[in-house]
Image (cartoon, rainbow, N blue to C red; front, side, top):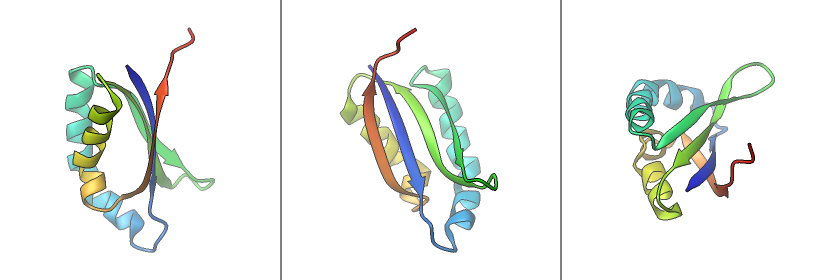
Length: 94
């Protein structure tokens, strides 16, 4: 089952530093999830100035509980980068 995830970063002054500090570990796990097929694609959401303000992920997992578990275990969640996470079931049209 596919799930679209929008994960928004905090908006406080320390938010960019939290993201930068956790980014390498986050990308290592994301690479592993991509290799095993659970992360179809993902990337940073940007503001009008090109600053990273969140993430979009397309997950291919068995159920929403697994998707939420992966998100909760992510270093971005554990380190407070992601402050709001939305998860939606997704059906590919084409």
